[in-house]
Length: 417
Ligand code: AMP
Image (cartoon, rainbow, N blue to C red; front, top):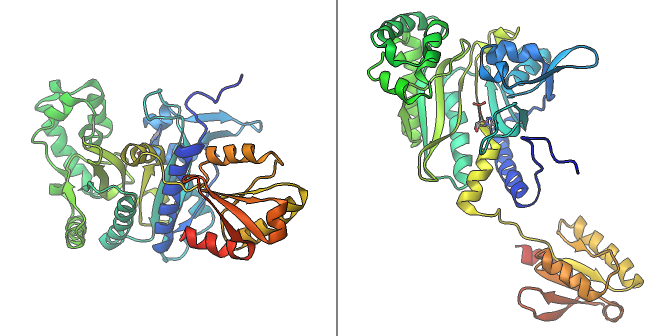
C-alpha cells in the first residue's frame, strides 16, 4: 500500500486541531494589527531563491526541491516564503507608493532535509513581512504582535534576543577587526569557519561548533562598529522594549549572514519546556527588495515554524480543547425529514449539530455518538414527532429529559454559552 512520501505527513485529528487553533489565534492577531494575507505559489523560478536566500546557503545548495518542468523551466518548491512575498510585491507594484505594506503568510514550505526529530521535508511556517517601514517603532509593533499572540497561546517564559548587524557600509571595518581577532587564534576554529572568515565573516559568529563558540570569547562586537544612525536605531528599539515590558537580552553573536540584512536581528527564546530554545527568528532586510529587482524599500519580518509550535503546545497543554457537537438522531423516514429541516434551521443560526443520516438502530447511533465524544444525543422518533418534543440524552451523565421542539435552538445556544 502506498505511504506518504518520506519527510511528509498527513495532518488530522488532534494534531490538526492545534494547527487550526494556532492559525486562528495568529490570524486574529494579524488582522487586529492591520496585516493582510498574501498567498504566493509554492513553485517559483529557482532564481528567486538563489538571489535571496543565497546560492551558498545550505537551503539552496543542498535542500532545495528543484526540477525542470515539462516546459524546461527550472523551478523550485519554496523552502521559505520571504523571497516569494518580495517577488510578488515587486511584480504587483505593491511597493510603488511609500505607504506601509503589512503582509502575512501561512503555508507549507519544502526542504530536502536529513531526517531527524521535528524536521520534515514539508513543514509549515507563519510569517510577517512589513515593507516601507524603517523605524524602531515599526519593529516594536511587529514584536509586540508576536509576543502577545505567543502569550495568548499559553507561552509565558519568553525573551527576545536582539542584536544589530548595522549596514553594509559599517561592516567592512568590523570585518577587518574580526579577521584580525580570528588570526590570533585561527587553529581553534573549524574548517568551515576558515572558509567563512574569507567569504562571510559574520557567519563565524553563529557556527554551531562548541569549540568555535569557545574560541570566540572576547571577539569584537558589531555594535561597536555601528554608524551613528544604526546605533541610535538600536538604542531606541531597546528603549521601547523596556518601556513596554518586553523582556530582551542583547546577543552580540546573533547574526543573519547575508548582505541584504541590516540593523535589527532577533530571535524569540522560550524556557517554557525547561531548557532554553529559540522559537523563531527574524530581522530587518532593507537590501532584499532591491536585490530582487525592486526599488530600495525598508523591510522587516520574521517567520515561525508551525510544526515546532504545535509540538510545543502538545507538550505543554496536551490535546487541543475541542467540544464535540450534539448529535441529532432521527428514527424513521418522517422523523428524518423533520430532523433535516430542524438541523438546517440550527445550522443557519450558527449552532454545531451532527445529523445521524445512516438510518441505523438507536443503539448503534448512540455508540457512534459516544465514540465521537458528543455531549448530547437528541432523539427524534415518531412518538416525539407527534408530541412536538425531542428526547435529550446526556451522554456523560446517562440521564434523559424531554425538550419541546420549539425550545431546542435556544437551549443549544445557551449551552454553548
Ligand atoms: P529558518 O527559515 O531555517 O530560519 O526556520 C524558520 C522556522 O521554520 C523555524 O522556526 C524552524 O523551526 C522551522 N523549520 C525550518 N525547517 C524546518 C523543517 N525541516 N521542519 C520543521 N520546521 C522547520
